[in-house]
Image (cartoon, rainbow, N blue to C red):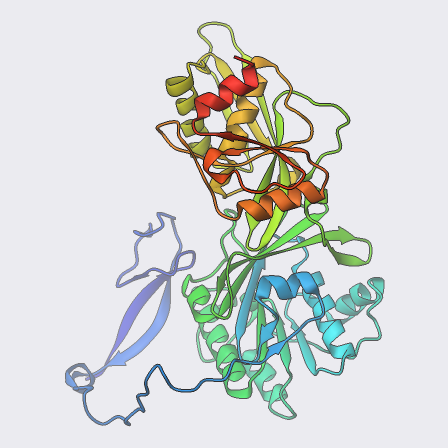
Length: 456
């Protein structure tokens, strides 16, 4: 006799359990397990051998001729840069970001530009009414773009409508958490519904050669909501970052099967929508007329693009017995603790009775290890209350031994600094390349940097 297999899936992490329980064993959240309809298990199906009865597949070698996939340029240079040159026909792209960050605005701008150039574009909104999308397009001056717009949440209705005519070159689904498949029981947004809806839409895109773009919600910790398998199903995962209190936005590729994940696109929110920022360094540098202690500029690398950001440090001495605080914005707090330990152990500087605050201006987030030397210079300057030169940049990796090591793309960093009018560079001694008009100061150890900054 056939029996129905019961399974319970966590609505946050997608973990599957054979019986219901109050707490998910994987993510630790409470009351998130929901029963899903499983397959029917029969004695024949349980014992059946899968090594026979299927169709033979064709195996080919790696040396077979393969044409490069055609790309669809959106006309927005920063978006195309982050995608690796544009959208690939038949690919699936997932864009996630905080509410109100500008995901729908960016995609509406891209859809309008492609449609105005003669490309067939379909925009399916599951959150907003069609009139709301039209009003936003009218505010941005895109009301006359021939974008095919619809409001729907049923995947069956969407695919049935698209099959009645020529397939669109670009299909935008806003958002995947609002889609519903009648093949699966459950409310929209659940793990099973998100997985099933995305699978059907991706299958359509692969069969028809349509570039599919899915908008994804994010959780309170910044990760894309829904099952983790959703990120594995798509070809490209883009993260739209930025603070709503700032005007800038950064589009970063987290996963890209057709390009690199080290490129970013920089935008600024304006009254007419998102505007491209051709020179991001000017966006993250503060305008200061005189040198101040604890501030230095670091030339960060985002793919092939150098971005100059200002690193600011503040050191406050406390009375004896008070517990010092360490606060970091835009950098790794563990990395800051390591730099402080190296300065104390290798250079004889004492931060144990001081509160340390570190900030990257403009809300920019740095993951480049080359920021170690700039952070060390800012901390020493703030501790000694000695201003650094306003026209100086610094980069280099600091080891636990106190050695200053080289980092990648030193020539590009120096070239960008010279282009923006900087005159000096503090860098590893092994990277004293041709700095052009820059005056280069090389250091083998972080102790030599401290001696240089303190005039020992």
